[in-house]
Image 1: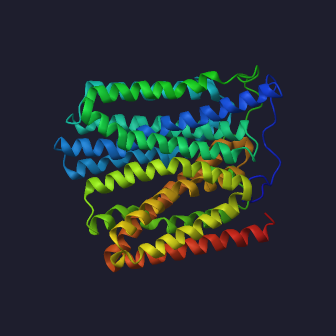
Image 2: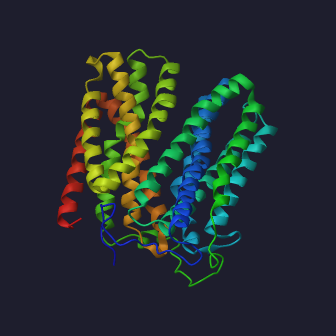
Image 3: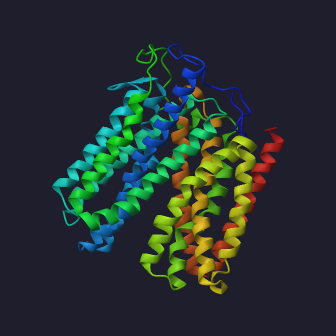
Length: 422
């Protein structure tokens, strides 16, 4: 029914211009507005996610929370791993109670801003149950917004145009991460908790404005032809050859297994926690934004498969270098660590392009949610497993194995592309 596709422009576009959209210069304006909305709404996703997993834990610990309570903030990733449960609702072009996808794109940021506004009634020293509950609500809103945006991108953009759209998605999410995990902490420390939260609320509302500039086709709110619901059967929304995609995802997760310990090996090398926070939380995240754009250009030029293979070969070289961390100069280690950490944005652009090329257009929300939920699970397992390997054998073996996994993943992509003529 569908074929495994690793190229950015190898298939006919799924999207056809709808009634209500003009051609020519007006069509360019519409496309620009769509891309702007995609980028800005991903800021709405990234800012809360990294505030609750990087910013809030630091503030809670500073307020006296125990380590086991602080660790519970990672519960916010649960909705991202389980979003496939409610994603089938958004396969329909119109979903109650807000209707068309564009209406959801306008409503969800407002709910996110409202959730943050509730923090004005609390402080980092508030009861953890309230803070964690609010974090979980924010995560559900963010995960839902990601599903809606994926369906929107698959609906509005041709496969060739998605390289740019996915690059902007990753760049927007990274910008949100940069703000939520780094800048907000500095502003909060400078201006105070309440002023910092007010700034976040205002920023979230401003980031939602581009969604209000998108024109809505006349038929957007019509129910149209009903789509079969794939609740609890998300795998049916992906291509028949998606097993190859899963193999590549498993190997890709193995290639990223050492990323979770980059901060730890920098500490072991003599860097302070503030140094590590600055280099990874500010510098690396800042670099990720232009890296995402460059990755989009690479995917547009070479296709997602070739681009991902090249990026993984680079990742293999970086991991091989980190395997000898004990004998590397601290400055060189810092540079390699920042580059390796930043490379994640580029590989994400290529992976998302592959995911979108291997979903059923009629079940775009479910298919994308299936792939990204599985990706989150695999990365979690790889991170935990990598920690166990490092504890038992040392980081040298961990990064050596990560390098091998990256090489195997690149090889699997090249073989798959050749066999399937993509």
